[in-house]
Length: 169
Image (cartoon, one colour):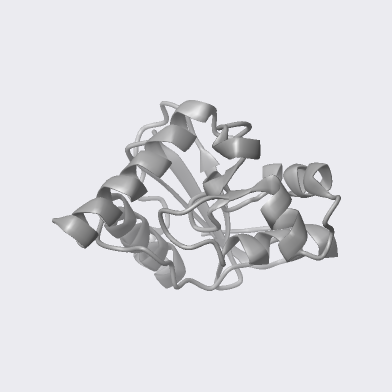
């Protein structure tokens, strides 16, 4: 583990997933970022020394296996108060469901703020765990995703498949 400029211990590791390599970072006992790491090879990094990192990896693997529909991790998301409000609201979108940017704007009390909500959504430091992939454009169109639309499609299809199997399997 290393130290960040504030003196907090920082853990990191990289895992394989159906949407490519994911780099996870923790600080001060909280998950702080998940990055799409392209073709980076998996790395245990600080996994053995960081219980939050270990729990994050375990829960992400369970999510991708279809065994977890809601994350329970200590999170720290650096952002403006408005961004944090949007990100917190994202966690209320039920698994395998989608909201439009307009729906999200209404939920945060800005009925005409779909663009502002979209901008905050795009800065989400914890994709997948804070499910920004569940936000779609008007009429359900798939638009914008920091990890690329192909990853958004993969995540939405995974959730739809798990939900279908759970409800009708």
